[in-house]
Amino acid sequence: MALPNQSMVLSPMLLLSGTANRSLSEEVAAELDQPLCKATIRRFADGEIFVKIDENVRGRDVYIIQPTNPPGDNLLELLLLMDAARRASAARITAVIPYFGYARQDRKDQPRVAISAKLMANMVSVAGADRVLAVDFHQHQMQGFFDLPVDHLYAAPVFVNHYRQKNLKDLVIVASDVGGAKMARGFANRLNAGFAIIDKRRVAANVAEAVNVVGDVEGKDCIIPDDMIDTGGTMTEGIHALKRLGARDIYVCATHALLSGPAVERLAGAPVKEVAVTNSIGIPETKRFEALTVLSIAGLLAKAIGYTHSDQSVSSLFD
Image (tube, rainbow, N blue to C red):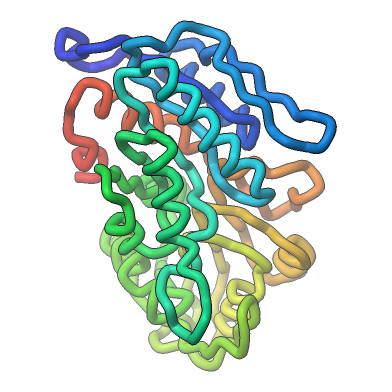
C-alpha cells in the first residue's frame, strides 16, 4: 500500500514487532510495503526477556506492533521494545496495540481493587510511547487514561463488509447487554437492520445468565456483536436465548478472540451459524472450530499507521 502525501513525512518509517502476534505484524508490513525491523527477543535461563533492536532507529518514526493479551510477557516485550527505541534516539514512538489487555478493571467498583487499565496506560506512557494506536478498547473511556494522543480504531468496518457480502435478509442486530447497545446500534445503522437487546444479569466474573430478549427476533437472522469473547459464557447464553425465541440463523462477531477455558467447547456446541473474529490476537489451531471465521485487520492497521505517519486524519477511516 502506497503511503499518502509522502512529501509531508518528516522522518522515515520503521516497523517493529514483538512475538505475541508476528503473523499480523507481517501482514501489516506487507500492506505498507515496508520490511519489519530486525530485532532480537530471547529469554535468559530464568525466563527474563532480553530485547535488542538490530537496526539503526535514530531519527526514525517507530511503530511497535504488539497485542498485550496473556501471558504478561507480551506486555513486557512491548514496554522493553519501546524503551530500547527511546534509548536509541527514535524520533517518535507509536505503540500499535491490536488488543489492549488488563483493561477490564477500569474503575473502583468495590473496596481494595486495582484499576489495572490506568496502571497499564501509565506503563505504556512511561516506557516511551508518544502515541497509542489501539483497536476496540474494552471501554471507550480507556482513551482518557493515557496522558498522550490515542487513536482508537474500530473493527466494525471489517465486520460490516463481511456481512454485506452475505446479503442477509430480515436481519436483526442484537446487543449482548445494555452496555453493548451503542455498538449494536452502529451495526444496525450500517447494515439497515433491526435492533434488539439481551437482558441479562451477571452472577459473578465470567459468569452470566441471559434473562430475556427485548425486541422481535422470531424468524429472523441475528448478529450478536461484541468487543471480545473470553470464556464464551455470555455469548452462548445469548445464542440459546435467541433460539428459544425462534431466531433463524445466528451469527456472532467479536474483535478479540481470547477463547479462554471452555469457550471453544461452548461455541462449537452452540446453535450458531458463524463466529467471526479478527486476528488482533493470534489464534492457535487448537482453538479453531468449524464455525469460526478469522478476519484480518491488517489493512485497517496499515491505513491507520500510514495516515498517522503522514499526519492525516485517522478518523476519516470511519466516516
